[in-house]
Structure formats: structure tokens, C-alpha cells
Image 1 (cartoon, rainbow, N blue to C red):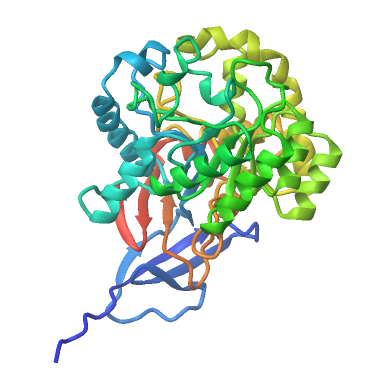
Image 2: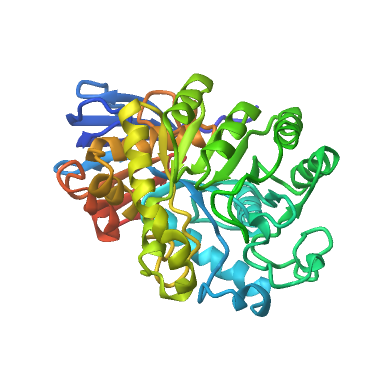
Length: 421
């Protein structure tokens, strides 16, 4: 008879628990972890005799943070030439370091919204040959119409250097699939699923054209969503500055609207009716608009007119009670390195009338929902995965604490202590 291994039990004891649901913090609480999952949480829970005790007295215990929109592109300079001149292998290796920095900063789950590196990182972690990185939900190849946002980074090159199926630049971080018409959209979705996508990312605004331009027709959008659903995949939509494109995407069946720089009341009402989640990328787009990312200074004129409307858009989303998850659109360029992702929480508080608790919920519970993992992670509740951080200080008093790695004393993923400071 094979003896079954006993489940390892850990207890994070005595801290103040912010459980991610928005509920009032629980002081002097204990979190019991049984293997990879949370067994119990509260002040008076039973402490198993053989448990490993983790002293959290005077500290804050929270769910691991979630970035619902980033890219592991392995940037070094962030300049366009890097897309074509820097070897794909070097960018992949750089992305390993970037992913480790993200986990070390307290982000236990991330949603990579376009790029092949994330698929490789996810698969390597699943095989056990790569450790110390967050859980990755990966889009792989995004889909774009011709002369759409998917061509933005390399639009100065011929089409056969853009599309991932024909490209002489297969190592391009974005690796877009160009598709026009219903049949091509269906085939593109099937291809990206074949290549390992957890979900489908599509672009409905942006690119070489105006930020407010509408991309993909209603029938194309429906084809993308319906084909994705055949494989059990959801659709995330890049939608910057067009309420028209946003409404079309929502009515077409998309599950998240990322960027959402310009909304109106009808967009928000439709989203709430259909369970659609908005994903913020405030800090990176605000900084782009004001020229704070010198390596992409050419983008300032393009984004500056939308900074004010974007702030008002996120205020409107919050006031209406719609669901907004934290994203960063971080790609690891020098002025916005992976591992500094928590600056988005401060930005929502500073500019958009979010309370620190609102921002934490957006980066935990709502983030899990945006990754379609709301039943598994995002809150400290019995039965959920033990994705937990221990913070030295009170982020409800100062949300900026979460940006300081030295204050993130412990990071636990699936019940395993990955970072211990």
C-alpha cells in the first residue's frame, strides 16, 4: 500500500486581514492554509497542532495582487527598433527576469494581453522547469484587422513582416494575426487557440489610425466571440477612445473592455447588464500623454488629449458601480519596469476618486474576475487558492506602501512561500 502524503498546513497568524471582498479588515486574524488552498480565516479559527506558524502580528495580510493587463515582451529600451533588431531569444530571457520581479512585488496572477513570451513562461512553469513567476493567463497571438492596432508597432514594414503566420519576424513580441471578414476571423481565433491561448485578445480601436476609429465589424466581432466560445475561451477587447466600438464589442459578447479611455453612460449600463468588466491602464497612458516615458516620446501628442477624458471615464465607472479591474499595460521598458505595477493603485486613488479599499478590490477580487478565475483566487476565503501577501504597514492608510518591495514581506502562491523577506 502506498502511504498518502499528509497535506502540509501553514497558519498566518495575528495579522490584520484585508480579504479582498471590500469587507472591513479583521484584526488579529489567522489564515489556515491546507496544501494549496485556504482552509479557514478569522479570529477564532482552530490552529492545527502540526501547523507551520507564520507570525504576522503588526502586519497586513492580503490576497496576492492581480495585474489584468500587461505584456511580457522583454523590453530593454522600449523603442520600435527593438522589435526588429533585438533577438527574440534575448527578449524571452529578459521576460523571465521581468516575471520574477512581478511576483516579488506581490502580484501572484497576471493576464498577459498579447505576445508569445507569456505562453512559453506559462508552459515552463507548468512543467516545473521555471519557478518564482506569477500565475500567467496568456492571450498569445492577438487578432487585428488589417491596418488595425496589431500593426501599430511595425506598420513601417510590409504586411508579411507583421502577421505571425507569415512573418519574417516571428520573434516579434506582439505576433499579431491579421484577419478581415468573418471567415478569416474564425480561422485566426482557431489558430491562436491552437498556439496555446487561454483567452482571445482582439483590437477594436487604435493602431496607425485614430484612437477613436472603429475596427472590426459587428459580424466579425460576433464571429470572434462565438468561435472562442466553442473552445471555452473568453474575449478581451482593446478599446481606447470609441464608445461606438465599445458598445459593438459589448453587444458582440466580449467579456472585458481594456483601457476604456472614453465611455458614456450607455456603455457602462450595457456592461453592467451583460457582466462585462472594465480594465484600467491609467498610469501608463497618463504618463504617455504627458511625455513621462521618454523612450516613446512620439506617443505624447497622440495620448495627451485623452488623459482628462480617461480620468473622467474611470470616475464614471466607479460611480455607477460597474466592475473595474487593475491593469497596467506594463511592458518592462526602462521608465515603467515590471515589478512597479502597484503604481496603478495609487493612480486610481490619486486621480479617480477610488478609496484605497476600492483600489485593492480592483487589484484582487475584480482582477480575478477579469482573468475568469474568480472562483479560484482574488480573495482570502475558505476554498480559494492560497495566493497571499503579507505587508509591513497599512495600505488603507497609504496605498503607496504596495509599491515598495521591502514592505512586501511574504508572497505565497498556491500555498507555497515564493518570497520571504
